[in-house]
Length: 111
Ligand code: 5GP
Ligand code: ZN
Image (tube, rainbow, N blue to C red; front, side):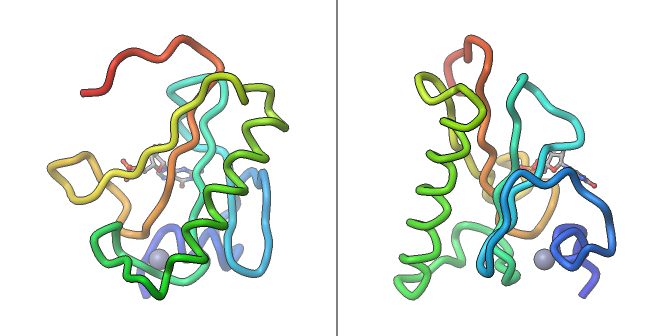
């Protein structure tokens, strides 16, 4: 499949890894909008959040637990944001589910 993040998961495109296990990969965003800007992606291809089902509950819970650990590791546990853009009109540019972990500066209000 011609998917940028599947290629990053497969190691075909290099990334600066922050965390990896059998289910997920976390890597630093190539164009960070804050001192800490990590993308957390499931290794299995899911297009976007509106394709998630109850069968993905453990996966999504795991992603949030890893995000909390990364926030601690990168020193932003007291102030960070986790967000996912669903669809082009919401700003999604890569069609492989990903959660942005953003922190390390004062974050403004949403939208
Ligand atoms: P979206 O706009 O879809 O929510 O987020 C996509 C993110 O992927 C953007 O923040 C963008 O900077 C990041 N990105 C795009 N291409 C690459 C890449 O090749 N490597 C890395 N590490 N990040 C990328
Ligand atoms: Zn993919």
